[in-house]
Length: 428
Image (cartoon, rainbow, N blue to C red; front, side, top):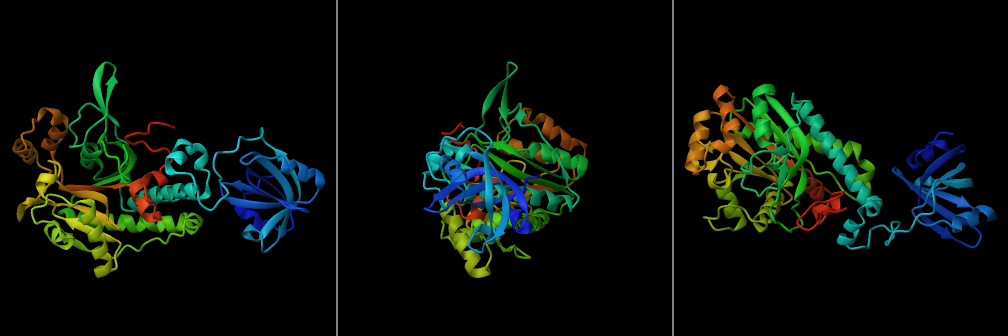
């Protein structure tokens, strides 16, 4: 008899089926016992009246893996309107050791550190696993949106020989007796691949050894990167990002409907044109000093509130960040060279995306490095590629965990990360 997922039971009323999953909860009443079985698609209620079967259910421990054969019976009061009656219950493994917290409660009462310490079990909670389903749908949407626009998925090295990719700290490692580092981003490689495929994207891990200990930072996170050639300036990149986000969120709504409903999440609408403000204007809106070199989290929150009140938008572009705060490969604004053709996208008051137009001429790279007092040698292979003809190009990077945490309303990115790595955590 083929196993039937719990979510499909309403289509099998009146038939005998086999389900299998984890013992989610038992409710033992005087004349009847209810066994709630959880699988990847939801829960099923099993009604036990036979004394022998009841004794077996009473002996079960939570999270024990079981198989149940029974008749699907309509009952409006049961989950999904059906339940299994006349069941035969069989263990598919030894009795489980119950976890130190209740998985059957609507929300986990254990502290976040406790959940992370016991992630293999805590992630079984429907709300925790729902966030992972939203994350998976977001990645699928990112890929689909860019595939539809002629982008090609690439895979770049995560072990690199230079630690000078950006201003961030890096993780060093021994590479057959030579120093090497975990990549901070695929930035250099995706630019080089524009010279091959014109439009590229990558989904992969990036590593940042910055000693942040906040609710929005991880030492390893998943980056959704894209780069495209033959742009006029950063506004072309922003347009592609807008369409990518719309497609991504559309896929989330289509593929993760039950997870979104469980988390009580409404997918936000991406405006046809996301409002944009220049960095100098953003400082004024946020009430920051005019000489502030960057936006602090409090400034981002103020801008998010402004975007919603003035434009009804969860999203806001901030363009023209000062060149001093952008990587050397950033293209300056031709009209205001002290500012960049770069941008951030804020989502509900938090920086979600960084992007912009890049330099594309070899001489400009040499000049940019010299202006910052940087030697060319650490970047030699990267910079040399621009001697052989590169189109005007630009791109962006979305932090997946930060996107999902803002989307589902999590207070901490670790709540939507299966096995987070941060300043303190290297296990499980």
